[in-house]
Length: 275
Length: 106
Image (cartoon, rainbow over the protein chains, first blue to last red):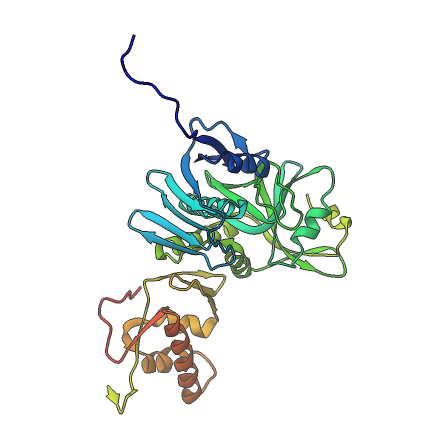
């Protein structure tokens, strides 16, 4: 028998673990409604919170506080930590301890942005990157379709045939692993508003999208490939070491993976020349 | 030497706050300061590679550009000044009226 007092906590902390590209980030909060919202949003990308690779404590601030997600994002280094700030969130992330804290509005966009930034930082250390690109697996190989808004990421995703697994229509996850590259699914959806499939496959080809009257694949120079990659890689911090690392990753990727221009007419026949 | 506020001699060196790589004959440079991305043509690449902080821009233009490319000295100097000014504005090149010590001379 123990004389120690024992009380039930007034608030309960819930954990939810979001796994993207094999990296498990546990999100802890006392706001159960927020946890339920995350569970819906990241369906297919959930795992047990035990043995997470990283932990985020999230405090939700009052809805009455003005929170503008359109405000400019700032990502700055502060000693060992990264500080991320936008109208609807303030976050700190320590890459050494893999722990962070987020104070944010009760919307999914803030945590989505924080996750993208953390993943981009984690990937940069490992030679990978997040890319503005749709991606899909076909015949066991991953294909990237990169381009700015309007280039055709949504279109090509929409016409993906039944034997292709869509990894994302918006933000692709490129993982460097033992000298080769994997394309991994992400829950970061674009116009299709469809969460990608949580799958991965060795990278086959990265396509630079261009709409045209017919479907064809053209070679491009390595310099153009690197330029296209750098234009589409997501990295948020103006940090000298990070920029160098990302640039180096883009150059290595362009050396290892064929990068081609895909000129396509907007219908499903484009998939006849992919995979 | 500075006369009436005009820099008559320029020494240039590559900033350390950049990432650069020569790919297929094109020098690709990324500024770590503002993330701007530059691809240099053949002539600009020659100037970039000669930017050791010790050789004046005039000398670079004279010995490296005019000797190897079909251009007159005045035009080459004007183009080089413009190119250097643009890269300096993005923090990619350091510019000084006197030789720059400690510059990367590789």
